[in-house]
Image (cartoon, rainbow, N blue to C red; front, top):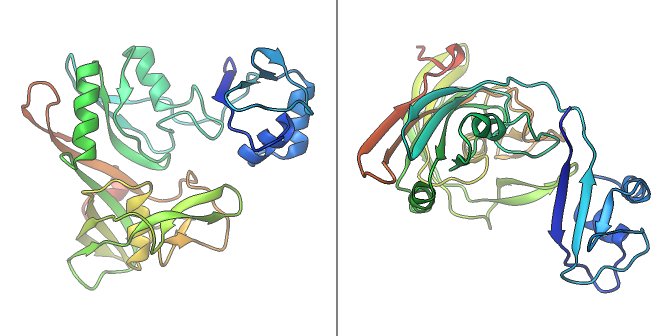
Length: 295
């Protein structure tokens, strides 16, 4: 059981919108009836005062949902330190552990676990819940700013391993399908392959094949959400066990969620200049047995 959490925002309502209508529109993961119950229970405030469902919301007002404590789903609550100095921290995230709070997770996250041991550490990026492997944290403001710049300029080399369906016809190939938002029946919108999306690039190398499956290495100069899962599916080789992305790199007929973690994907290696000293760093996280080389 966690201690609950205050979700706070500056409201940007439509003309004449009530508190109930605003929350139901902004956060459709809960029904209007559920939001009405939360408001009636005194969980929602507007500029510090208890809100009513019929109260009108003005632009710029502070709206807070004080979510009561809740039981979070059970996940692996552990990490291993791979690299540490005064400015930078690299850790190994287990498969199944969310990187950041979202989707019902607050304390059962890598961020919470790392900050309990290294106060003030800030995640430089995130991995999907079902993805294992290497995550970087900045321990100083100087390192945080430098890492953010390096990530934006594609100065960090990121190598992953993935288990995919089928056997690619080429040993090496590139996927440059654009990635953007598409409709999703449970979340509203999710990232997927879409012609009007943002430019994206993944370099793929086949490491081995067995029983109609392939172990591949994926290197991503860009870093779109779920990029490797989307690109490999778009290339006709979706990740084994991926319930969300099917051939073409779009959501399949079953409305799976991004965090459903039947797939096998591992952040294996990062290469970057140290954000403060400039020393070249090459950090590896050993892949799990299912993603070790086979032929």
